[in-house]
Amino acid sequence: MHQATTNAVGPFDERLDAWFAGDSDAIASSHLLWRDLREAAPIYVYGSMTVVSPYDMVKDIVYDDEHLSNDHSRRGSRADAAFARLTTDEQREAFRRVMQFESHFMNRNDGDEHRRLRGAAAAAMTPRRIQQVMSAIDEHADASLALLPDEPVVDFKLFSTELPLRIICDLIGVPEEDRSKIRDWATALSGNRHGTDPDALVPAYHAWLEFRAYVEVLVERYRGSVEGSDQLVTLLMAAHGADRLTPDEVVSLFVMMLQGGHETTSNLLSIGLYELLQVPDQWPALVDDPSLIPNAVEEMLRVVSPAQTASRRCVAPVEIGGVEIEPEDTVLALLGAANRDPSMFPDPDRFDVRRPEAKRHIALGFGPHFCLGASLARAETTIALRKLTERFPKLQLATTDVRFQGPWQLRRLVELPLETGL
Image 1 (cartoon, rainbow, N blue to C red):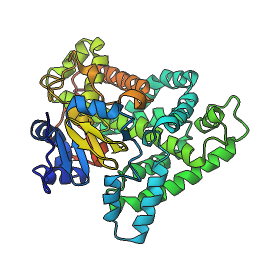
Image 2: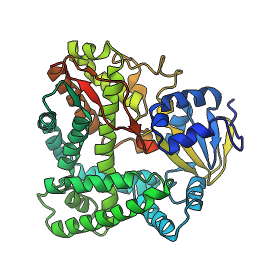
Image 3: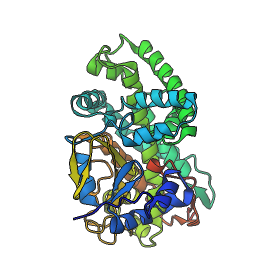
Image 4: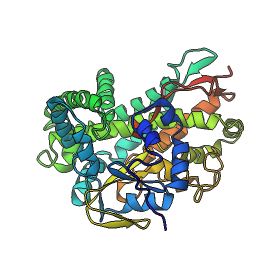
């Protein structure tokens, strides 16, 4: 039976402090922290939360909606601790407003409310609309590749950022001239991870105000013109009726789709390429045998874990690995650690496009909160790899000295310089 490490200041606190602060080195080496936590403290009490790293426990946490709630932004031990650190009235008001806004996210709700919001999104993402977008992925990939300069060393972060942005904006129906500002709003909102960074709160709040005003204009523009429209805001209204989906809920769905469809997929592509190209035989294997690409996508999802964690608030006493978790305690399940658990994935830190158990990862969630855009993310990553192997068969890292940055839950590469071999 596992025992929780409950020191007032535990042996991993300093490393977790650096990771939560978005320290570049800590973000880059997070897999080493996950390994050490799994081996020495699989259930670790860190300040106001309980951090869990083994695969089987993380999977149980993600699936358990009886004892653990997704409503953790406004309530619970971590939210209380984050609020207590705020020093100004402006920060405290921003915290309340932003956390209230994030409470409309699908993945911050449970039971009937979660099913209602997820149903609205699923009804708006009709098979016809998804097929339209997926049929255009090839075109978007070519257009994104065309932006790369004709040079021997190229920063492929440009490609990994541009392709998902084009695809998700196509799905949502965002006018091209509005895409940059919507991306900026979503970035500001994603920079505020559960109110833990006071400096990110106020920018996130102002981004929310501007984003909400923008969507309210869209709602008015398309109100009454539901039939035959492919605009997502119109489809959302049609799915549940204008009186059932509030402006804040529409905005929250936009933000979630932009974050899930743009930022996480961009990080999956860039970090995934970086991890893959560090193993010399992996890229030639894909070039020689493109049938390996779908499994390589699953291995990317496992190794990268674009969303590093899943947070829950305890609502009924529950035992996790022999440790009692009390109501209002925050539990942080480390998806990134679970996806590198050697009990499930032998030699877990090695990227292997032929890994037979790659699909067992839980990078896209599990159970009722399984990622709604999973098929789209897999499709665009598959096509991106196919295009890149065809165009750059000798692709390799220009350097392994790359910089990572936070936020901690959505780590990203600053740049990805690659030698094209052309």
